[in-house]
Image (cartoon, rainbow, N blue to C red):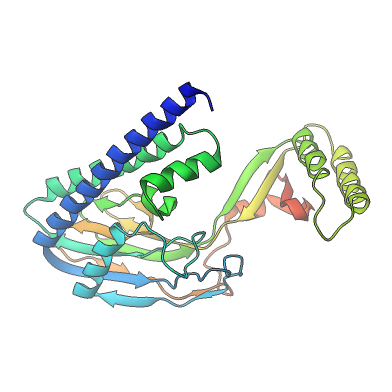
Length: 301
């Protein structure tokens, strides 16, 4: 490794250590400010953790465990600093705790500033990590700075609601993750896959299989719009009615700064057989062109 590259990695590591310490100290300040406030109400919804080895299991049902008031408040504060892996729990499935804490404080502005500062430091940490070339080296340095950290849990933000809230409704959603591509891009992917046949297939069988898929792509009309489309994992979200209507991710408990009570629709158990609505983007893709790649033709409505 060139000396210049080593110097860059040392500088990045130093930056990450400083940001880690700043995140820890800001989080400590925030938790102290929340402890000093008066608790008005709180609800959180505990989601079962995913054991190691069950990451790919299709999730059809999620049974939540609801906690309220002081128990919910302490679970919420612990959740804000829960960024490390747990024994027996998959690192590929992050810890989530939807819900809210409603507090009355003489230091609302300080709490808002601390949350904003914390979220900024999280962004800076994430952006600094991106300076490191290569996923292996990034993993090595990040875990040297924060041993056992789950990056997604470190990066995700805390939401504080500055406007007066009249309603919060929690719900499940399952979005589609899409990525645009072209016929030539797909062919390039398939040609690269030819070099790596799966263990249960001979090289000749694999090449014949991919040659047929390449022929399918070449037969498509020119300038066709193609998309990779896959279903993301089910997540909790929150609809919020205030001066402005908001929709926020509910990975962590929301912080509500007001005395006045508000209506809340709690998060219910998830059941894949019950569909809240049909997403509009599910209507813009027909049958897959190549199911194995989750490749679809874009259908303009």
